[in-house]
Length: 382
Image 1 (cartoon, helix red, strand yellow):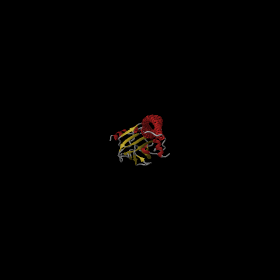
Image 2 (cartoon, one colour):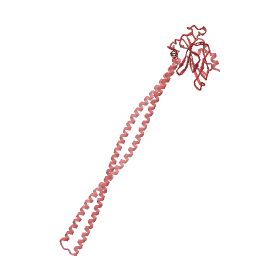
Image 3 (tube, helix red, strand yellow):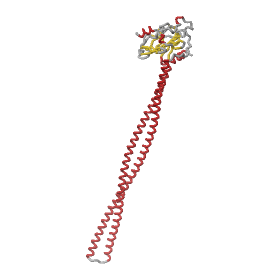
Image 4 (cartoon, rainbow, N blue to C red):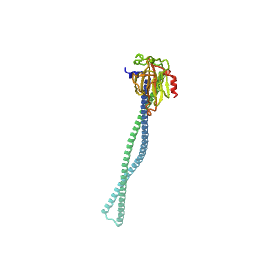
């Protein structure tokens, strides 16, 4: 097991809850966002279909009124045309009959003239009769032509009536298609509403689930903060005591004699484990006690790591936004300069944090109780 693996195991209880919380929350937010987007899409689709139904119903109403008007007009025209045709046919028959009868009488009168001699009065009477019959024939011929024109007009009207009937059939076909379209749209809207209802229920369930998981995670984190510190994986790094270091480095963690790692800070946060120092800009980072550097490195986005072994299975860990100027194996004196803070924002003048922890036999201690309170108070007042 290398040093980097060891330090990761050592700090895993500190960073894992935050990482898991962030990952869970991110996945849930993405899932909720996708479901909300799906609901919005379904709502938009239902609104569009409802709008189309309204348009279809409006068009259907207009076509229905047009059809009823045409049907009413057609019925009246059919009735009038039927009567006109009957009258024209009857008039045509009567006119033809009168024409032929008058023609036969005229022929009879003319033939009768050739058969016997007549007096002058008879000739005058016959002449007047012939002229009357001829005028009658002319009148009947004119009336027959007029009647023929009427019959032609009636036939033309019947052709127009047939066109109107074809238009009615087209309207009926269009209305049938519109009715079917309306029926299909209503079915689609009903189906979409069911899907939307299911999606809404799923969305509400996910929101409730996410809220419950967030509450559970919060309780778990709170429980973790209040729990006694558990023994982590043993860090297999030889202590200074095992290497024959001086007695001055063999310290007990019972006393409050650890220097704060930075001399100027804006505030501190602590619980039952380590202490977080909040700082601004570039500041000196100093060793909390004499010992030996046993690890230097970095930990993902949490910053650099510096671990010092003080002997007697006591170690301190510095983690955060700072740059160290020591290396593994370097002996360290108490309050020795080991690096500088570097918040890596605003050209190094921004805010930053350093986490400081004292460990005894691989067990994180209540570090705040082990800090030199006089130095702590003096530094915080600067």
